[in-house]
Amino acid sequence: MDLENQARIKELAEKHGPENLVVILGGAEAEASGLAAETVSNGDPTYAGPLSGVQLGLPAYHIFEDAIKSLVDPQVYDDQISMMEMVLDVDEIIKEVSTYREQYRKF
Amino acid sequence: MSKFRVVHYINQYFGQIGGEEKANIPPSCKEGPVGPGMAFKAVLGNEAEIVATIICGDSWFAENLDEAKAKVVEMIAQYKPDLVITGPAFNAGRYGTACGAVAEAVSQELEIPVVSGMYPENPGAEMYRRFALIVETGDNAAAMRKAVPAMGKLALKVLKGEQLGTPKEEGYIPRGIRENYFAPDRGSKRAVDMLVAKLKGEEFHTEYPMPQFDRVDPNPAVADISKAKIGLVTSGGIVPKGNPDHIESSSASKFGKYDLDGIVNLTAETHQTAHGGYDPVYANQDADRVLPVDVMRDLEKEGKIGSLHRYYYATVGNGTSVANAKRYAAEIAQELKNDGVDAVILTST
Image (cartoon, rainbow over all chains, first blue to last red; front, side, top):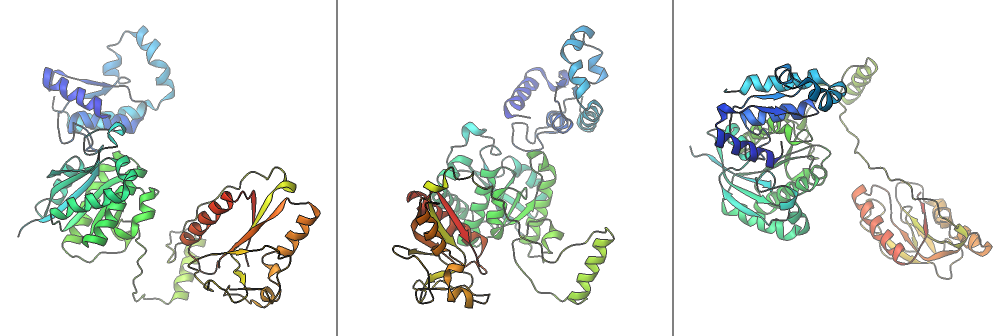
């Protein structure tokens, strides 16, 4: 996860309280999505960004996950997301994101 | 017992200063661990601590190599470390090269051991593997999770003076050091065992890994050879009689540049080979067999080629290292280009 986004999430967590935040990911690839989920929960595993050693414990979901998908207007989801859903490895992405989320979430 | 002292070298990105836009910052120093140093802290535990972190922009290091090495070494020396960690650099080329250059300077000038981490194809690994224990890592920063424990473990082993196993056992990139040991089986048996394992499709490990050579794509064809100026370059050791530059018969440490002005034919009276390792009788009888000056003069006369370049270059290929050969080639090629040579004929023994 790039340094600017880490800084933004850190700032939002300080402003609103980590217990009030959920992160929704749109990554196209399992490893990168898992890395992002880990970064916002257990800290940046690459130790490059502002979230190095910072355990916000935020739960992260991928937009493909039913918990999030079911909250979105089906027409909007269809227009914006469903195309990518057809070409990406949805199962692998969800597996990776949920593994890190369940391991490190505090809220 | 007091903790071992470690200094950590990282780039601007892992130093949390910024990405490419900050790659031109000169070296700076911070007390204690920064970035990946925090992960090392957990692995080093109570036995060692990162007392300082040196951060330098990758571009600045690359563009000011000598100054960068000197400054970084000076900063490191102040902290009197027992060991230096550089990186891990994964597959980042400039970062890997900087980590390697720091390792070289630290190990040579301060005589302090260095542990680093790189993807095996990082150019820094090939260039500087002799100067550090470079742990083999994945190719991007996501591999930090595995790289740090492996590097930390190796660093502690070195600090405590424990005997290191082979590169394969310890997970670092071979430094090219050979150590003698007594094998339980003789060579012929080990070779046959390997062959049998190979035929069965089982895993086996060669005792003599082949070096990896790069491949060079041929240049496009010469547009009009009848107008081209052609140079002759040989690794066949053809030199003027008496070998005036004393080019070695094996593992040549230099190349020679010789005048062909007015020469239409090489003879036993004028030229010879300096090359060892093969029967030189026929090359000494008529050196044109290795360096075809006579035929080139014919082609020049017939108008098949534009002209033969006035000078030829020669070295001895026998046992000459690839690194030296590359260096000679680069110098020779530059001179040929400066002299307006269009194409070169390379001959060997």
